[in-house]
Image 1 (tube, one colour):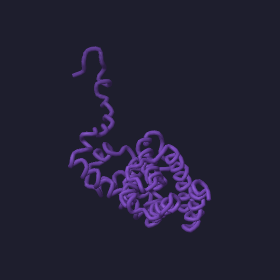
Image 2 (cartoon, helix red, strand yellow):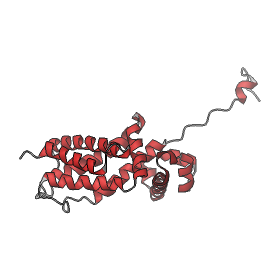
Image 3 (tube, rainbow, N blue to C red):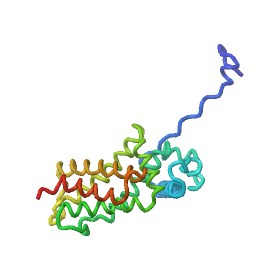
Image 4 (cartoon, rainbow, N blue to C red):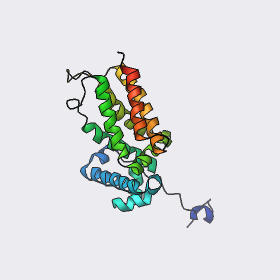
Length: 220
């Protein structure tokens, strides 16, 4: 029955569904939530690897990850968030293999070249996946700022870490190291896009990155 002072039409209009609530840090941190998040990212990578950016549709990801679409949106509001987060996870894998104790090279220039080769080769192994993740990163808007910043921070850490004198395992990158790393990162991303769009070969990318490192660091 309608309340006094309201019409039947007003009371019969259904309220719009609430926006999916974002998961709290505690939820994301639980074992079950971490496993679900892993499945979602694995599904995203699998779809992107086979069909590129356009193949990553939210319902397809949910089905492949065996989660409800609403649950997927609680973790990731859009495919851009999904793919940029996936990019961060892939770069973290590279970072785990780039421990300063095993970096090849006696100088900062040589170690930087080694790290850049690691990142570039990792991205070139799967062009469709790289295209999807890079496209999402380049097109991300302010709503994905935290995900984009995470990717940038990982790359900066990788590059700046290679510049540190490896004789001191406790040394941290200086402000100048991080500034140089950001410039190199920007150049690398630009060249990655050119490789994906076939405006530059893999050899072109390698040569350009070597020149960039030499101009910034090699003063001899």
